[in-house]
Length: 126
Image (cartoon, rainbow, N blue to C red):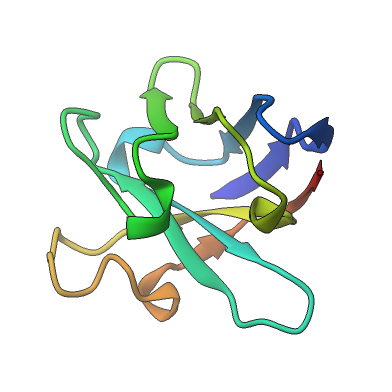
């Protein structure tokens, strides 16, 4: 599956952005979909994940209820709605697809994801 992330940009602290991840090549519903981010000089970190049906989502602690992941399997698109953005949210955001069965011990591990989008830059100014 090919993934294309978009929607990044420059926003002031407290603002919002919605990132999109468009999939092509295979049925999106076959995949667990995750979002990760990487800030300059830091390792890539888990942001959140949505299960195949879209019924369940899980987030990193730093999200603190500010982000929401949704998916539209018919439109083969996954979204990351980010509200109340902070300067420390500045990073390149990546979407990723995981074809493995659900494993609550593994979804935060970027190495378990098979396919990655190219990333979209999010910059939050103070």
